[in-house]
Length: 264
Image (cartoon, rainbow, N blue to C red; front, side, top):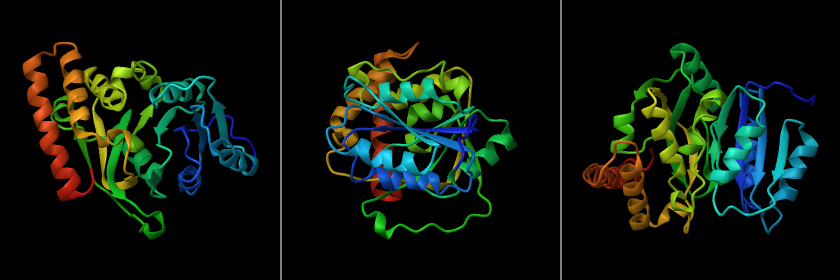
């Protein structure tokens, strides 16, 4: 396949020791009905064969590329920022190295982007543990809803692997690489974008499959709530009372989406 010089969408995938999972993730991008794209995998000094797995995709498809970082950053914030800087696309889509997209994910989001003249979009998400049991039905139409700054403060509702955002917009709101923000750098980023006056348009269909793995960064719920508290407290205009209240709504929402809805 010939090199795509100016793709509409750049998919940024941060990776670290993902040899057993990243191949399926990349393939879910290559299987998209929206083909005007490039994939940039930014590897954070993996110690396994992740880079070798990615190299096989590069050999087969010129739209796939790999950036190897020289120093491990201990989280996805810096790799995502590097990927955004290197992107050729007008749009950036983020995808974690263990998640999987519905084949129509980008197609559906780009349609809503055109309909609403939107710059910032997301989708619903469902969790899974065994990708061999995944199946995807063809979609004809989907609804969407608008997410605002206040709604996102109450409960984060924008899965990172579902985000599609204008590159010109995300460049103004890079992920915070401070170690204190590890695991909430994405939540913090989306809040900052929304606080600037932008809205997020969420496709009301689970176009992202989130792989649930024991020991993931976000698994320690108490630690996560402390970080959510920190995010709200340190936002411009934030205070301890607001931070406490939004941490509570975040906790209750997390229980609802994790155990009742089983998705976001």
